[in-house]
Length: 594
Image 1: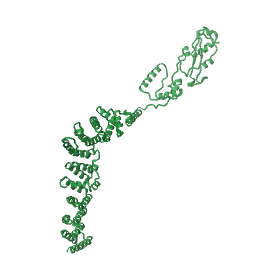
Image 2: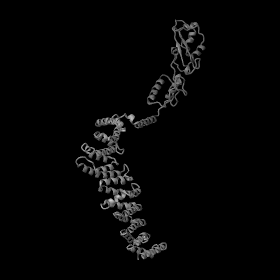
Image 3: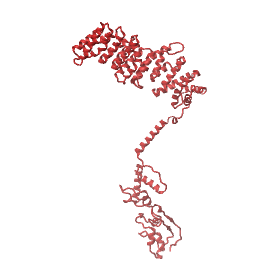
Image 4: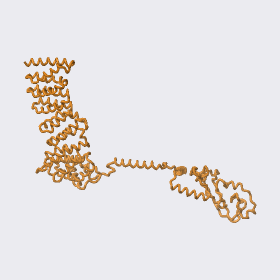
């Protein structure tokens, strides 16, 4: 009978497959589907497996029969024959693939089936669940997290999350805004307060921290720490009520996980409940070491703000060091592992350590120096460095470099804003001095220089000196020093009247109208001796004293003058020939030059 039923069923399936291309929604195929749903209750296991394997080919063609098909598959999953049940588990996956809208309902059924005791079936069911995560991760994980919140299936779901399903689930976590990740992290946060502390630690460690949502510095990470520390506080308070030595069996696993997310919240739990003088000595030796390792790692972490780190170093480092000093020398290796980061943090402050830490640091230094195994290593060097921190200039060259560059930038800004005359090295010799003076003279005058110029101009105008006209460029300093007239009528410095011109009373000091001494001597004519005895007259032409003395004039004073370096004369013109030598000798009355 069963063989006939099986043969008839195969013939129906062949006819339906042939009609699929002609009439996929035709009456023939519909009749075959109805026949299959009835055969799911057949006594033949072979027929029921045949039904389970072929329902997927009709499922999407007849939406009005979907519920009948789904219920048929669920019945097969509860069959007494294991092979039939396994065929039903696989049929569920195929129906979800054919129409993903059934993912949630089918996931729920598969989670219920996790209660099976048969390892072979559990393997198939687990694969079916991972397939549903691949089909629609958000829908499948939402159902799983709901069941995880309930006591009935929580352990089974957590086993799936932490076991065979973990790699598949993590492959679908694609960022903070990803729907599947949002569903997964939200569901697990609701689970944390309801599970045992070791399980909570495992959930955080293996499922939550790998998510991008809990990257360092994220708001979700801060929220996770708060959620995790609440049961941790309760566990600590419960453990501290015990008498005798404390092993922290419930709280320590949570502290281990929370220490992977250092921050102000975690440090506050340590300082309020553990790193205190009444509590820390009560901890069992191994628990004490572990708590100190976790705490020192938390306060020296780069994720802790500098201000918070400074406060903890000031307030608790002495207690930590004193506790380590009371440990056995047999535990020196663990002691130096804790001292090293703490001493480095104290040394990095760049100032003397807190006074309360100096005695325990010196005691640890002695202990390290007496350690026969020389296990201290870097810890000993850092202890010495913490007790005698180097100057800041030697310890942090990068800071000084940045400050120096800042000063250079400020200096550069000042140079750009004031735009001074570029300084050039002065050359040796007069020419170099003249070049420097010319550069200064041609620079833009300051207010004080302009005021002095107005004073000199008014003074020069009153004494008959020609003042340079406005808008005419100033003459070079060399020309003004030599007394040469400036181009354009002005700018040259009028030379000081010579002694000879002052004695003659000649007020004409214009160098352009004066005749050189040599020319005047050569052009003079003899004067009668009688005229020499008469009072000397002052000719309008300004004859020289030498000419009058040559003509027999005697005024009671004899002068001898030697002039070198007339303009273009024997001494040579220009700056190097600008020299005068004058000698005045007293002579008797009537002496003259013959």
